[in-house]
Structures are given as C-alpha cells and as structure tokens.
Image 1 (tube, one colour):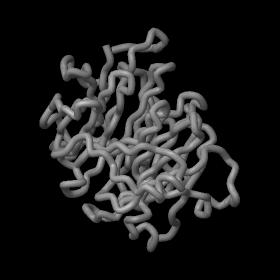
Image 2: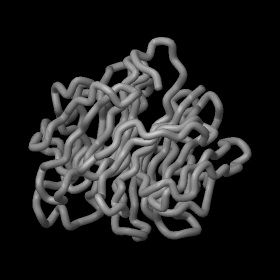
Image 3: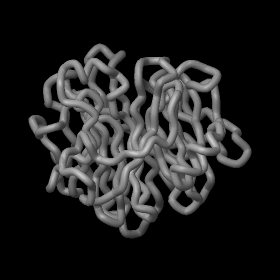
Length: 312
C-alpha cells in the first residue's frame, strides 16, 4: 500500500527539532522515519526507482547560504548530504521535486530568490532562474521563489513567487527546461507568467497526462488556504481566457505541502497547523487524516514498487 512521508519542522516543540513521519494513505501505521532534524526541513520528494527520499533544510539564517539538501532510504537509513551548506546560491531551499526521466532535483530558494537544480547525487548544481541578487531585492517578497513542479513531457518547469503574506500578489511562472536561453544570465532567463494576483501560492504539482497545474495557497479565504487546479495550455491561450482556478478544497490552515496520486485521483495536503488531508479530485470531498500532527511543511506520496531498494 502507498505511504505518505511528512515533514514536521518541530518549531513548537521545546527542542525545536524536526522529523520525517510516515503513514499509510488512510492515516494508519504512523511512525517516525528520521528524527532530530535541526535546520527547518521544508520540502520533500521521492526517487521511486531508487527508493530514496530527498528533503530541503532551510538552515538557521534567512540571509546566509547555510541551507542544504539531504537524502536517505525510505526506512531512514543511509542518510547523506546531497547539497551541503555553503553551496553558492543556496540560502533557504523550500519546495523540491524529482524529475524521474532526467534523474534531476529541482528546488526553489526563497531568500536566495532562485530556481535551482542538480543531479540526484548533488552534482552539477545550477541556477536556472534568479529574480534578484541584492539585499534590496531580498526585501521584496514578490521575488521570493517557493513552489516547484516539472513537466518533462512538455519541457517546462513551473514555480511560485508567493509575494507578501496574505498579499494577493502571488504569481506562478514557467520556463523551458534545458540550457537553451537567449542569455546566459539567470536573471534574464525567459519566463512566462501563468497566473497572477493569487493570495499566496506555495507548493505546486503538474499532472503531465491531464495537463493540469495544482497548488496550495496559504493566503486569506475565500481564495486562500485552499487547494487549487488550473487547466494548462499555451500561454497566449491562458492569458486570453483568464479563467479562474478550480478550488478543490477550502478551510485549510496555512496550507503548505502537496502530493497527488494521479491514478487514484486524490491529493494529499499538509498545513502548518498540523493537518493532513486526503482530497478527492473528482468529488472534492476532504478527509482529515490528522488534525494536529505537528508543525507540518512538505509531503510526498510513495508509490508501491518492487524496484525500491528499501521499504518500511
């Protein structure tokens, strides 16, 4: 049966140490996979072929480049540093995703104001998009990159720039995968706006087959603290039609993490208040798996596979 892997930052605990929790998709069999995470874990993703989890650590400072990315087997063993502290461009890595075909990790860096990627082993760290580089830029919350999704079938990656808290200025962009661009400067890379004036978009996921974009939004109701879906297409069509997103779930509590079972037509969402939810993408029924599990950020769905090198 499939399992969820959930990040708990532990910020409300006395020792402020985070952990990775895992449970079945119905909420049963909850267990701790890794404990004692010191540096604000935020995003999580899974390499299903290798049976490994990857997660980001925001670090202990919002201005120094001391964030990192780690990896471990599904049972928490063989823990490794993939992208170490001090790597150029890495300040506060947020949401992360694994592109299976290219075996590449993509992530957003909030205070670093970047979209980045590297190989599954941490090789070839690269800045794809930079929205700023100065302290003045960093103070502009419109430049903060947070959520990330990759559509290898169509050759795009998507990211969110959340804007001020509850500010209704959030944006979602996309750009072409690959090194081909009109300039070698990441600050000038061609990017296309998909949506703007969103309450506060956070985590993203793409349904490659159905060509839909999903995201969590932690802004104010009625459009914020929601799970959303938007049908994709060429950008000219998107801009012309300006269709409103389809709100799949409301009444979340600082919504953050998102993982989708496209086959089972369910979305799994986590929020900072400790909620874990299973949401039916067809009926929009929301099932609460946990109400106060912890201080939750990212979530990843682990698919059943005989090729996994380790199982819980």
